[in-house]
Amino acid sequence: MIICICANVSDRTISEAVRTGCASVEDITMKTGACSGCGQCRMHCQSEIEAHNTLLQVSEMSQQTA
Image (cartoon, rainbow, N blue to C red; front, side):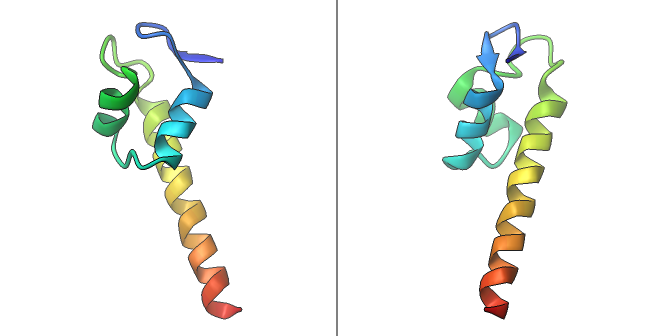
């Protein structure tokens, strides 16, 4: 699904950018072009970053208790 209509960036592209190291909305903008226009997709990009960080924390906690 297209998340950023200004730059024609999909949810998959944004997710991949986060998984491969984008740690801020600005990083996502530099890599994909998302959030470089009207800004309507900014909240989605921030949510992707937060979800990814939560998964990393859960994974780390699971490894520590194993």
